[in-house]
Image (cartoon, rainbow, N blue to C red; front, side, top):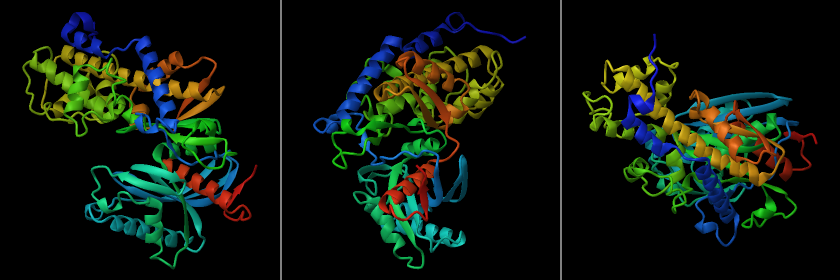
Length: 465
């Protein structure tokens, strides 16, 4: 017979700590309203630079309908790998992709900026030759996971790399032009680089082709971000065609809270995580909801309670004391056991050299994990409900990408529950896990941009409106 535990009675010290991670509906509504104010500031000409949700313009102003046909290329550029793709849209809901994934050598990633893009151009050249489309001048779109300052659809100034890259020579330069210059060294191939978008916009566009009511892209992984479709008249920093009605906005909401908007719900454990991070005082919203930070919060709480003798009292603390040691995979495993079963939780603790644990302690560990991930889902719900209410559409789909949403047994349920509690009930929504990568969205962007640029040329991309 399995044991069930009452946290308040069976591990009161743990219960007391976890109460610090239980925001009220009023708290979540307050966060939602603060998010809305920051978005409005981010879109404004006068206050953009002061907003913690800067709302960068993507310059993507067309949405696919699902009737588009054609074939085109995409380049996904991520912190740990890059992928070149050939994407064919041949019939409704029928996407054919052929791709090659490459891990960039450290010597290239740490070298000059030109070396990075020469490497990418070489991969692209070999790929299009292999696929026998090297002479077709196919449009190519870039899905880019690094911080950009967008000035146009095909102009993206690199602001910073992640820690995996040291190619400082590329910072401050236009990524699209760097790739075009590198491709020019391969005159035997013909590729038309059309533009660059972030990962969230790529996910939104990829789902939008299959579900045309998609209006939000939500990234739920080691980074936290979102994008959504805004009305152009609200985008005061936009100086383009006034007859274009829509704009995909990259919220860049990881920084929400950097100037104190979330201080009222931050507790001592949140502050400790922030202080000991590589970027103290910044990306506060991400530190509530990013997958890496959830695992680190659990580790900090467990270590504190171990030192107090509340759980795992007699066990070693050297491995659990290593910063960032408890990752998202371990977090998900701990909570994946059925109620009253702690097999996977014990397997995780074995990795920390904490063996033969009492069921009470494993139940307490599971309770801590549930508490931290539930709060993260609640705070994300505040942000998502804010975007839903801003758009005022009767029905939308939300493209979700990220392991914590796909693999965690309850995260999606909690996110959906609190989004429904916080959003205006007149606006219906559905969270949908993206089956296609952000590169598919980049390919769609390239095709639409090509159709707009060459309106008389229907050979490569047809929009059947």
